[in-house]
Image 1 (cartoon, rainbow, N blue to C red):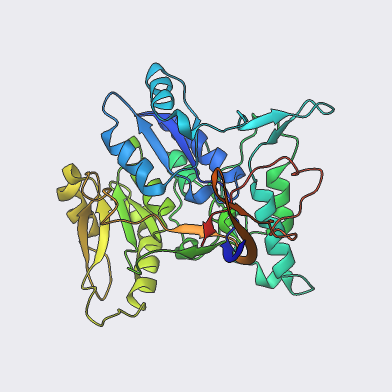
Image 2: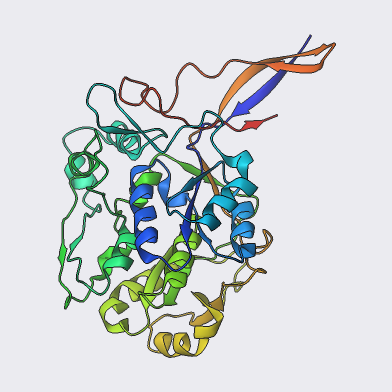
Length: 371
């Protein structure tokens, strides 16, 4: 019997959320579900229609573990059937009802665990000053940017009969600023540095990728267009640091875009001179409107349109979806050559990065192995 060292990286499951193409309401619902999941900011949205070739490429780029239907349709059912090996092996729904309370619990590792990571890392009397960069924005449902805000900041749903109060947990753990955004308000530049409910789902996770390429930039598109909102979501889910600049509402969001580009201006190139312009991600058919929208942006490197609604970008070579996990742990495994083939036996670490208690003892997560 031989022994082998393994590196075990525990991580949240990467969930692909299926929505009907064109439904902003379902996209907002996916953003709400993402806000409840640990690592939800890194879960892709897959628009489903008659032609799913692009969504299938996105599915492969993200190496999704589980597919979850947010919307309902024949096309979504057919997609789930085609990729039935990505269904949960235990047939766990996204939520399950607690027998005693008759309220819903998350079946997968939830974002309250992410907040627990935060509290463990930043305890003590100075916590409030350390967490001042968290925000919980409020806005009116009638705001023309309401859909964008849900996708951008995340949103806590109120109609799922949840046993846990995720919003109260977020308020308690982060003590966020709570700006109320009025329809006529111009958004302040500090939003580009602020941690929101959706980005806080990535707390405690480390990123790793095959290549180190700085592709951060902005996304320029229409705030009421499903394609623009879903592309923005998936680019951010892939690990890019981007902000949304809406065509037709540039003046309202320009301070956020300018502040974000100023931060990117200060990022050093490796090698020097490699990055001459910041990308303005967009759809190809909007390139003219995008060029007009970015023409007045102040940046030392300039901004250029970068269409991303094509199969070349999502072919797995040009854009890599960064992986995220907790810190890796080394374990010792026994390797035995039995009559049925090689058998690798090992024990998972006794200590996991999340507290396994009565509330989350049934929540699932994953552990990739590195031999």
